[in-house]
Image 1 (cartoon, rainbow, N blue to C red):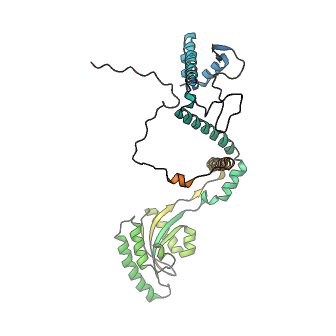
Image 2 (image 1 turned 180 degrees about the vertical axis):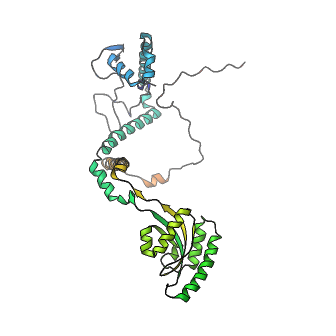
Image 3 (image 1 turned 120 degrees about the vertical axis):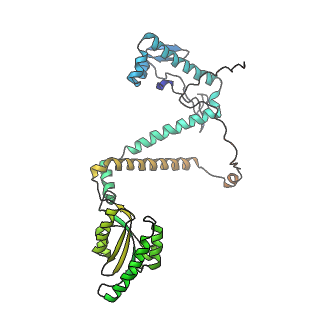
Length: 342
């Protein structure tokens, strides 16, 4: 539908005389179709008009396909008459005082707040510079460039490699525990965690159900030994939920279950510039909006009466009221005549 035919908010919070200033919450609104002087009228009525210049602009806003409908004089006349009828309906609504109707006032408030948000937040988003984007990338580089990471749960039995007898005993126990783990569903990580909590001898991870969190293979090799890193690499090939054999390190024996995998990331600033700029713009819009709201509340000296608020009864079972106005953006059609009963 052409933009000129969209429903113009009809309400003002209160129309007051021009001879005195509007009070807070009140406004004087000029609802004339053409408020600027000049131009060549193509249609006129008492105190208002549609100009040729405006008509040309409205037609240019249409798609080429829609513009095809308005090539002849008769088609253009029909379009302009529709504009005039719409404005006459607005004028009649004002003459009947409908600008003070609560539903109309509520619709105007929504339109005003929407426009205020657009004006306020578009300016905030425009202030994102290349330097801002580069600084954000540097601060959060690990989100864009990081090595492959795996998440393992492990069941550990202490058995120093040099103590052959202890290793042999621990291996027998580890094999038995691995058999129990193998009988569990591959992705029942909670069940494996309970097994680790009951039997693991690694004091840092045993209370965490054996969870090693996400670590790179390099960090795994440093923390637990290259054997664990090699086993983790093999588990990645099998997929999340895969169970290792008994893995021996200098400190003891591990049974490992792969619970997560993150592929390596290597995204340059150019790769993520648009993503970062969008995030920064949204953050700045949110911050600007919060600052505006806080400033408005301070200047208006907002207070809350919590005692009165607590006395407001809310009936959750009351059905909602039916809307009393047509959907915004549409011109209401005349009501259909009642159907006749044969």
